[in-house]
Image (cartoon, rainbow, N blue to C red; front, side, top):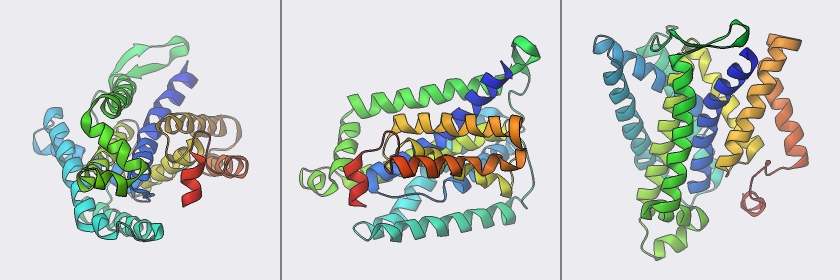
Length: 287
């Protein structure tokens, strides 16, 4: 049961990261290499907001939401809007720059201090074999499921969600039909940053936040590539594959190799299906 619980919780963390990457790629053909840094900074913001309010989790949630909205909107309006229509590698280089700035912020603002989010760490459920699930673990599962359900309902049944899908298919045609493409793309960034922040908070509830923790972004990117860079369903499947591989490597082979194995899986999948398990072939071909 410990095996199942650990893999499921890791899958939740990586699925949130991968979903943000998939949303940005599907909406604007941007591969975000700063996703891990955004997740950890979001975790730090949640932690610091709670401290400023005397440990109030509600104030911490508000701080994380405000961070997600402002950061997502700022990144698009100040940087990404200017490179719409430019070669795809221009946007990638910008995200690399954002990653460098955010990692510097972790060092300058939080002194690269290793912190953990002590919210809901008490055991809530005891499983067979002596394993336990904390309230934070249960929250990880519930919030991840809720996130994907809300996304599905949003994209399927709301006007803005339909406009989002239209922009993802053909931004120029959507603009000609009266869709506010800038609003859609800025919303995509806000959703992606929110997903990364939630992932960072959940990660901080089980491990230490620190400058080295940004490596979870590589796991999220690997999950997105394995599942298909434009597929939310693929994000979940890819996250499960990466989480399972890491857990088995730690338990059965060598913990040192746990960070490298996902990339081996990525190489295998890319050699067989370059567009990922659930990716769309023609969309990758355009890139």
